[in-house]
Amino acid sequence: MKSMRNCVSRLLSVQPHPVLVSCVLLVFLAEAFVIQAVWAGTQDHRRSKLSTSSHSSQQSRVKGTTASVAPITITNLRATSSSRETRLVLDLDRQPEVTEQRVDNPRRVIIGLPNASLSHAARTQVEDGTVPFPFVITQITPDAVAVSLPATAFETYKQFTLSDPPRLVIDVTPLQEQSPNLIEEPQAPPPKAGPVVAQPTQPRTKNYTTIVIDPGHGGKDPGALGLRRTEEKDITLKVALRLKELLRKRSDVRVLMTRDRDVYVELEERAQFANRHGADLFVSIHVNSHPSRLVKGLEVYHFGEAKDQRALEVAARENGTPISNTGVGWEYLVADLLTTKKIEASLELAWNAKEAMVTKMNGQYDVTDHGVKTAPFYVLRFTSMPSILAEIAFISNPDEEVLLRNPTFINAVAQSLYQGVLSFLANNR
Image: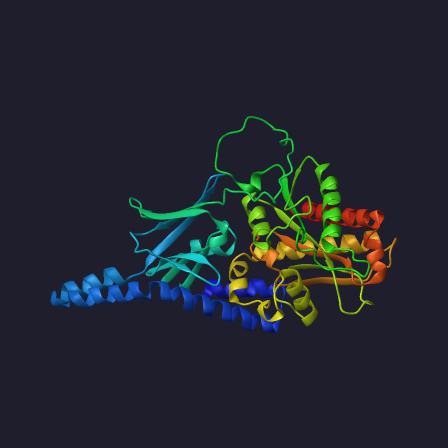
């Protein structure tokens, strides 16, 4: 389909790689196969009804078949958000037939329109990122459309149709209960420029930027260990707390943390926390490790296919999964294929952070630059905003372990990440 080809070409323009081409094609084939099964019974039922009508006159049968088989057109997509719910409205040219089913791997709800197609305007809205999280809209076949909702992204949902004019409405209630391990730093509200008029939340009109800082590991999960028994979870928390202090000095920034003490937080909960609070940026902080104690340096990742074995090994370690279960399958990429802007922005944020770290710290320390890379980190998988994971040093290297225990080095890392974030924000207001 043309919309899919456009989405694929835009994704490949960011990270061109021949293997990714095959992966992307498999994504759409797999997604089509899964979702088509949802409404296969509905289509059989429709054909059965058409067959039953064969006792009518030939003229009536022809007219009836034409009217019932012609796909419904989704003319427009509209969305509004508030703290209580997000609503997606599909404007239609006539009343639809709707199917609904829960699917695993990954867990999600699929709301299907078995006899419908996206108009050119609606396809453009899907491709340019107008459709908000957590809705994923896909034209599976020329006459079948699916709206997919990740099960981890909502507490409740409902869908219903309206007439005059015909519409399909889907309401999603975000997760309300906040884990006690997920900390929101209380802050004074940003200054008001004038009277506030009640209206649906529009993230792009905010006069402040919400940044979620994610210190890796914590609690029962120490992360990587150094020769001196230095634990990754302690280093990441120190850097994160210092970065929070720097960012809080800005009146146009709101800072949240997935943890601000030594507690364990599930990877999935970290992404949910950022989505639920409408984060604009997500910065996850980690410390690297390598079998060779000679390897040192820094690297910054954003979500995507691992381009080499070591990137895959790093993702497997941080995810806590075997390498065989860490590779990017279609279930990892389907959402990001439809949000190319997030991928592009994550890449830019990663480059800004990496360049700031290399430039600022290279005068004080012997910095080895491993560059910007992509890998299937779970913590970045379900975030709906630009997201990066910074591996600030190798705790397995004895010299860098010594640095990681030094408050001056911790401050330099935080200052570098701070400058990288500011550089990104300056170019992406």
